[in-house]
Image 1 (cartoon, rainbow, N blue to C red):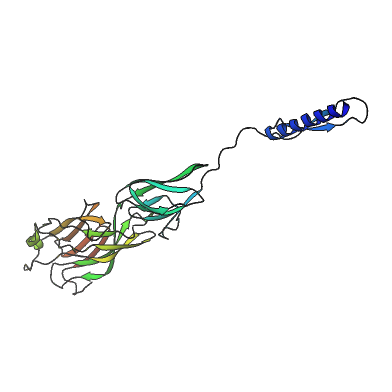
Image 2 (cartoon, rainbow, N blue to C red; image 1 turned 180 degrees about the horizontal axis):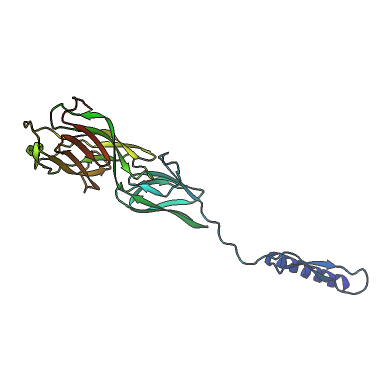
Length: 300
């Protein structure tokens, strides 16, 4: 009987140890076996760090992104330009996208192409046995165009004309607009004095969209074309009165060179001015050029 009793108590003791070890009472237990007599074995508590019987939460999905464009240098940024592309990856979770954008991918990786207008796009990593995770991308459109003058000044000595050329950059420079296209639309200009013959006419924009290249820090995404701004010359004889020739030029951006022109995203003032002392000034955006009627003939 003593041996049977010891066997039963040993079984119960080991079962209790298993339960306590799994659930965590804050204690574990050791056995004290009697050497002689009919004493039952006892379980002695030993305090150890507690455990929990509660089931642990499933691990979260991992998700990361990297922009195709290498400039700006923060390629993990979540503010992106319209039509900008981003690679999204997840370690073992299935990816899906919602919002205004195009998603191409299978399984654990894919490419997000932002939509053509401002908004948000969410890419989510999910798994049946894991907690889902998401990245929300904020998509922004160009806020304006930076004009930076290049080359010389176009002018004919003795004539009331002035012109310049500029590089163009889509702003802001905090995202990439590479892959877009930029185009000017026509307008109805206003002109007086030596340029009165141009009053009510357009400014003769290039009908072909120009592609947009890589972002340049401090400027923006560079447009491939060089812009020319010129006052023109009506051919009137001197003396020349104070005169103005200006256009409010609508600009559009396109995701394809063949798509119909959407509403303008900005309007840029191009203005030629002649004052009574013979000084000529051409401005377009932040770019400018100045000469005088009597200055030597020059070109871009």
